[in-house]
Image 1 (cartoon, one colour):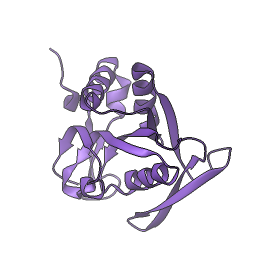
Image 2 (spheres, rainbow, N blue to C red):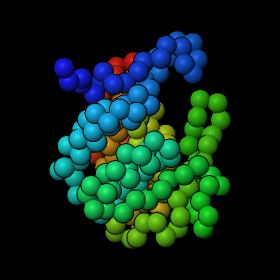
Image 3 (cartoon, helix red, strand yellow):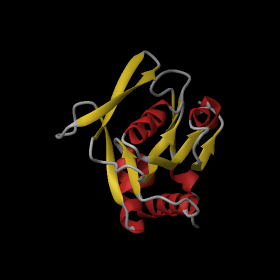
Length: 175
């Protein structure tokens, strides 16, 4: 019997806090079949988009972004937490539930006019992805779209990205 991709996701109640149902993709990437289904779903989701490179958001966006970049013959731009990149960077803040966080990319990671696809494992409120889009645009790049393995529809993250094509392989209604 072949499992569906959603069957590889492990749901963990009350994590990281009570009342939250966490959709853990660790079980997806631990299985060669689960990982294959995830990559196939992501590839299918972006086949109609035109882009020159892929931006993976730390950390799980690196996993999927690197695989997609290799399969599609594209370069990979790393979007990292502040202080993790060794060369000159630009940064962008985004809101968390309690406070703010910053992400960065190298100043030479995106060329003017370059079309960049953003990849991450999950979209919830959309803050991190919107910050990544802002960084790409500040460097003169164009956001060609964003793709996610999982979308939490109830958190309306897609609304922050309404100016870009957004694709997700799996959706969940809740938080």
